Figure 1 (tube, rainbow, N blue to C red):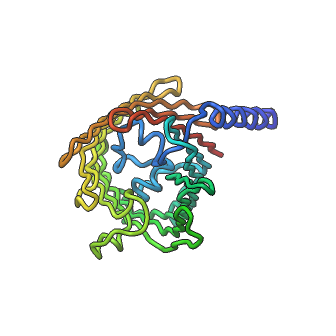
Figure 2 (cartoon, helix red, strand yellow; figure 1 turned 120 degrees about the horizontal axis):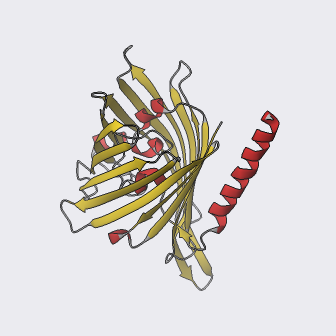
Amino acid sequence: MLLKDKKANWCLGLLIIGAVLISFDGVAWAFMGTRAWGMGGAYTAVADDAGAVFWNPAGLMQIKEPSIDVALSFHTEAADSYESLISYLEPDSGYGAGALSWYYGRLDPVADPSGTEYRVANDFCYSLSKPVGKDQLVYLGGSIRYQNERKPFDPSSVTGWTGDISGLVQVSHAVKAGITIRDVYQVLKGQKDMASDHEANMLLGLAFQPDEKIVIAVDGWDVLNRLESRSVRIGGEYRLEQGLALRAGLQKGLDNSWQAWTWGAGIDLANWRVEYAYLGGDYQGIHTMGVTWRF
């Protein structure tokens, strides 16, 4: 019976992954976590799945079982570009919770008479989270990332190392607070690195979860205004008893006219979770999907 259950889970997983790969004929866009996008990017104090690698590595201590996560996002108007990310998450076994992830992007096509080339980027990341104190109300986390980037029609690559630091605090039974400094070295040096505008950034977040069904969160994005893109992000999630979760979020720029709204959903199927999010407003319509296998 157990063997049959395992075979059923594998078959279900293959169907899910196949659906992810064939559901869209558009083009991939940036990945930051499907659930996080569904909640409008208000995720720094939530960060309890693979999205923690980006939003708050300290949140990995909330992982309860190992998993493999795959994320793809699509923009129907971008021509022949894509980004993808795969992560392996390991819960705390006495040494802290960790994650290994690999990001690959083929972006920004440039055409000339000889053909079309792309900006190609790789980001290999190891993230670790550990508790502070015996009460385990405070988690500290960080990531070390090796980046490799090559511009169109440039045979050479630019490589480098960078890192992030973060913290997560259980303020009360229902309230959590989080902080993340991405590319902490460049932030302290007052410089920008070679990589995307998602780097060298400070995030602050607060999450309120009165029960297992409801999560409400608010984030400050680019708090130091190093990217000149400061914004407030508000999001929420409501979980139904059937394993279905519904999400929505809003974003509003503080120093610019940026406005965006998002919505999303997720469902648990045996050991699998499938998630979807749509980004509207100034995102101009982005579809993103993620699949998680818990084992």
